[in-house]
Image (cartoon, rainbow, N blue to C red; front, side, top):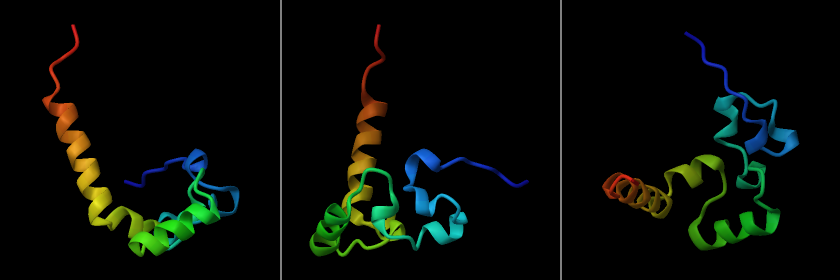
Length: 78
């Protein structure tokens, strides 16, 4: 079953019409809110050049895992 998702809020305008398979190879600056300068910093610091690189980065993955575990371990709010 095909799934349709609107990613417009997550992407800069020139990248909104790309297929999901093409987005993984798009530059990090394609993400809304990531400037060219910030993308260059990610490239220099971590070798992150594409959306796929960002998603696969071990530091990013570790941070997400820690945040998820912390959320799951937090006691329910009263």
